[in-house]
Length: 316
Image (cartoon, rainbow, N blue to C red; front, side, top):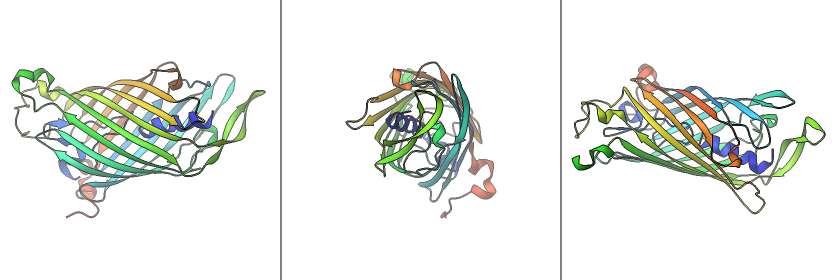
């Protein structure tokens, strides 16, 4: 796999996410689910596990089964510190399957805005990717990276009666730039003579990761929605959604400029957890071919284990 291809795949994966109500991504009557292809605008005490992805077949042949674990802890009511890692099993025609650890990332995330009447959330993050923390044989041995990002969610539940049919809809967007802190790294590449791997020195690329989602909240179809402030948290609902994820490799040496995928799926949120599943549909050759899928269980730790997560680390 070329370094620029690897950087773009890792970028899609990275765009791959307070006590009480804020932990659930709530703004007024709007619940923003924890999305799977891009990050959502919420901060909180969360654990995503299991978090499984069967990726589409890559342009150069391999197909990955990825298992990740993501944990985040509130430092204050607005700032969280997160950690994610996992493992990949890679298979390809006429090649023995390979497995290894994924890269490890640390995320600092800050909620910038919560507008309950306007159903809007906004946050910013900084992701530190530990270079060399993953296994090169599964494409995870890239450089140390620094990725700033911003995330926005906006619901339409505030619209007047004349536009009531639009109230269940919401949109979210995510933007991040993964900047490598080393100019070159050693990658494993298949040789023309066979499936064995050969270390190859390649240039590291800066990657623009971005995407958006369109969501539909079934809460607005029930008598629990009164049009005013919620009487209770709008949990216990299905949220059909589709995410669109893009990764643009920047720089004059890039031959594969864009990867794009559509990710239609469904989330259900309960009192202490959310479960979500979606398909991965490549939109161009760079994103591979065939259909993949994701499934995730997201646990709200402040509600699930209140004795430990009842308040931020530096809480009241």
